[in-house]
Image (cartoon, rainbow, N blue to C red; front, side, top):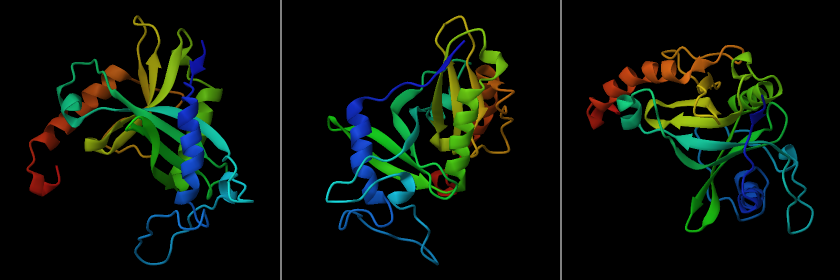
Length: 221
């Protein structure tokens, strides 16, 4: 059966294209809010790196290479889950660019009746994540052959965890998760050819989340 990726609203895509140059090296003059770093200046991708033509006063659209819905699960919900979760849809993640050192990930959220680009990430992990998206969509794991699934990104900020969420469209089918390149060793994430049952994933994260909730704020919980 097919593995789907949802299509974002047109207004969201336009807002991403319009907002991205301000986050890039050599973007529109005067649009970058601030640059702060320790040590040598980082090699931030340029508009050309992600396919944006900067001729004239209006930049062209970037080379958008993948888009995924973004969902978030709170630490409390992770700790108290009973094997079923209802994460909150928080926006969209846009990938732009197509090479190892020049691929970015932009996070789009809906604020005050408009879409806004709130963060842009870059580096090897972003490119590795894009390649994993391509692998999963081009060759879905055999475990999802019997039903239709949506490919999404699920984050648990309190655990610093983000996974691919293969959400079944049928209530009678089981969801799966696959690690992203940011997974933590304490979780036994499934690789693309061996996804982890959502129930097993939720069992793994429950004690980790519960332990963090018992810590005082002074300890970083």
